[in-house]
Length: 174
Image 1: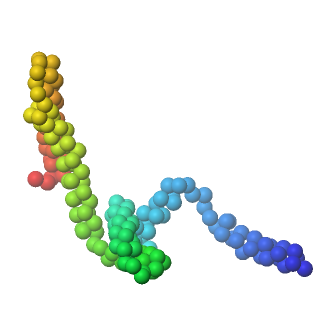
Image 2 (image 1 turned 90 degrees about the vertical axis):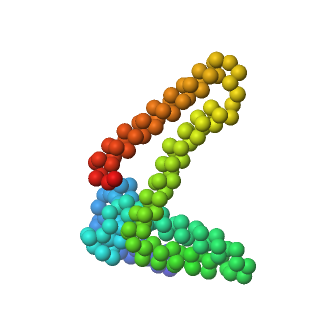
């Protein structure tokens, strides 16, 4: 009798779930990523007038960041159970990500881009300055290496200037 009931349960599941497989289009990983970004863009709330995909991606990253910080902070509380900390962290992260305006998200992106650019550009310049000022110059070979480092730094700064002018002219900023 049990095998017969199991057979009918499996048969019913196959009949019910066959509609899902027939209705499903063949989608690749790109459509899956696009679906996740649509959730971040809040397209399910605002329709086609939602934000672009970059804002959706930043919104998802902001939710993950807020959850991580809140969960870490809540895990420090002594008598708070782990599942309560996770629930509070998820709810507050979702509220933060949903109600944060896109201008604030773009401002966060610009700030991190500026900091990253300063590190990437300023790192080699500071390294060459440290090479020139904090190392001794015992012979002409070391002096030649320092000269090449200064020439490289001057070329790097001139290229940064050229690209900054090109980008400022293309965007109409500055």
